[in-house]
Amino acid sequence: MSSATPTSARVRRLPVVGALRLGRPSDVWFKPALSVVAAVAPPSLLLMTLGRLDLAPYTMAGSLCALYAHNRPYAARAKVLAWVILGMLGGLAVALVSASLTRNAVVLVTVGALLAAVQKAVCDATRVGPPAHVILTFVSSAALFVPQTPGQVPGHLALAAAAGVWAWLVGMAPAPLRPHGPERRATAQALKAAAAYAETARGGEEGGAGARSAAYAAVHAAWQTLLAVRNRPSTTRRALERLVIRAEVALAAPADADPARLRSWARAVRGTGRIPRTGDPRREEDGLRREEDGLRREEDGLRPDGAGPCRTDGGARLDDDSLRRDGDLLRGRDELVGVAAERAVAPRPLWSRLGPLAPVAVRSALGCALAGYVSLALGAERPYWALVTAASLYQANITLTWSRAVQRVVGNLVGVLLFAAVAPVAQLGPLALVLCILACNFGAEALIGRNYWLGSVCVTPLALLVTELPGYQPTGELVTGRVVDTLVGALVGFVAAVAVTNRRAGRRVERALTTVDRAREHAARVAADPSSTPAALEAARRGLAAAVVDLRATADAAAGEWWQRALPQERVVLAEQAAHRTLAATVRRRGLLPDLGTTSTYTYTEGASP
Image 1: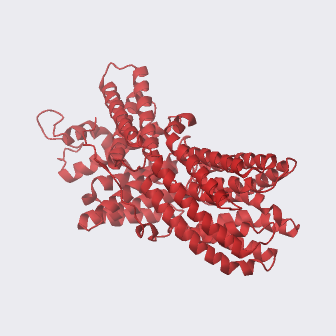
Image 2: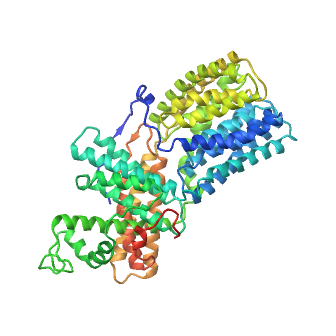
Image 3: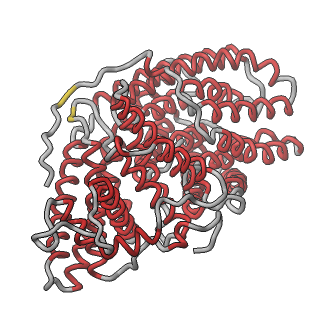
């Protein structure tokens, strides 16, 4: 069990200038930007040709699903996109039916707030995002205030579903060309982040803590991507897993890491050629398999025969450097087998993941409802703008929620100025309007990776232009309404976030860490006991693997809250690594999985068959 001293409770500062600082663009910023344009353009242009551009908001609801799952392997992306489309259709159906049954604005705002809470909780529980629940909430909330009749609902849903199918095809289009593209990108990012941390730590430069945190986050993201597909891993993914473990080794011993080599691996992984070798296969498999027990004892300061030094098969004494390198390789092999064991554990049921998110759902429902009610009291014609603004604020903790509020307000205020400049061009005709919408879609996705406020500069005119699809409206009224609703939504939404805190998040992580420690100790005892039965080994293995999965989910859900202990992020990562090695011991003892690391793991090309 970990003996780390709990961190003290603290209040996080609420940044202003720092929230607006621009970051580096994503390496693949153009992929979601081009995808959304490819998904939106054909349905919109077709409707324009038919003279029914007033129906474009419904097709755009389905087209916007192309924004999701760009970081997922294609096998997982296919499922995620399908569920996103179904979720979008479900929320849209509730909104359209509600709009067809009543025009009471208070009732509609209440329905929109409840939908927003459900969408937020489900997206957080399933880790769907970016853009997570915001797009779904925007679609359903806007539909609530579009006049409907019950007879029109099926046709409008059919349009959204058809566009959603097209968005699915757009999202899956790159798969034949680069079947392992997302996994390669995530692995390359982990290697680059580990190299940056190794350089910072070796040179004693300032910012070492930030580089370390970024490297741990990149490695964690790489594991999430690689574990997203739960079937038997291909040789491609196994080789990528070995490279991620190399990044983990660099984090554990940055002084011994070679940043140039890590970056070289990262460059090679990003392409479509062979995955680089991470070591001599014969050394790792033949030699290390025979030396495993001796190396483990030597690392603990023991000698295998109780008298003489540990020796290799050739009788040469192992020096400290080679011993450390070989120990790292052994631990890497152990973690790889442990990862395979973790992959075999079925995900937790959705209902069990939703339970801890109850405070987040209550916060979303309360904040969105109050924002909509205040907007109505001020005479707004489109209270869903305030509702969506409140919904977009809620992040993992109050500090991030505050930053998002600052970003949203600044981005929207600049965005309405951009809309005022673009509106005369968009009003030249239907084609000009569609082209402006496509340009805003591209700009939003191209810029939002640098900072949310910069993307909002394009999202705001996009939302205002969509309102003009059924017919042009006075620019001044749209600008004034959007500014007021943005301020109302940001203020009321943040007050609700402060009022409904999630104080239990930190305790859940501590309990999850304790559970993993106990499960690991139990599994280690069972694996070391010669009299352990296969049933006991299997129970211990699956219990530990399930505990690791639960720890990751709990840590993700509780990335931090106001007025609580700072989360022990490094303890979470170290506990996962130790658990993977223990899982490897139980797997080998049980004989459930073969040894990994054959020559084919190192030498294959993109798209090779498993």
